[in-house]
Image 1: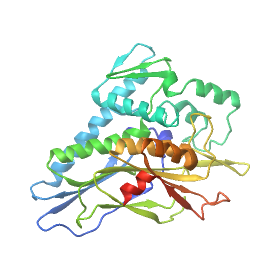
Image 2: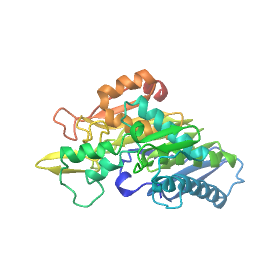
Image 3: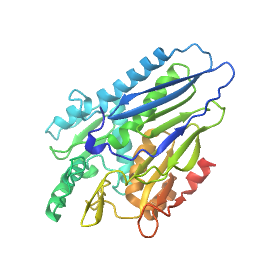
Length: 342
């Protein structure tokens, strides 16, 4: 399991709309299962009809097992868990896979002005998300103390092939990038079997390659961002791209009529307060889409769009109406999103 329940409740906004037809002579294989504290869904088109479901499942489960052994916080034998358990500031050599994810985390952290932060765990714990019935508001002193224990560049040093704690108690959580990496890793496993047309989804993070059973780009629906069943807000055709959505509306508590979201801004130490309800990102892989959707949700539409244009990020923001209620939604997208979605 990659994600602790307290760090895994990101809104699952993306829904694959898989149609039933199929290319002549091809077979559609479908797999579902549980992984990383969530579920996975895979649709693959076998052009040769030589691949069995059992062979595909074996390859998929092996790939997921590799990710668990490298990046799980809750498997004590995983590479990441062993790093977190060390109370030392000496550099630690890490696998190429974990090194790649940590380097990507560092890149997004810097480009997003610190909004994507794999060390934000102390703040999320402090605000009580994941703890049943937790509604007590932390004090300013408690928030300052938690912020002193987090901050990617403050508590970590990431170099090629190694990770170093600047503070011995630092902890790394990869729930907001690890599922995306897992999607990509499963995709590589499918390609190793000769499959080029497929869609992989883990907990709402998606990568799609080639064409769907109708011979079209894979049709992915983006939900209306409400805790009720609001239906599909928009549909994107996906091929050779990753997609991830993050939302603020499924996990929150209220105190004296004020709503506190589980989405914590690492820069302020507080839940986000802007009107952006969800952010959907398209990227070259699911790992980057996963990380950037989190960063863009925390940034919100105004600053998020500026950064998206500066860095060529493809993002769609869906905002609440003026009264902040879950109605009257409006959306705006970056130029790169409009280009890719077209």
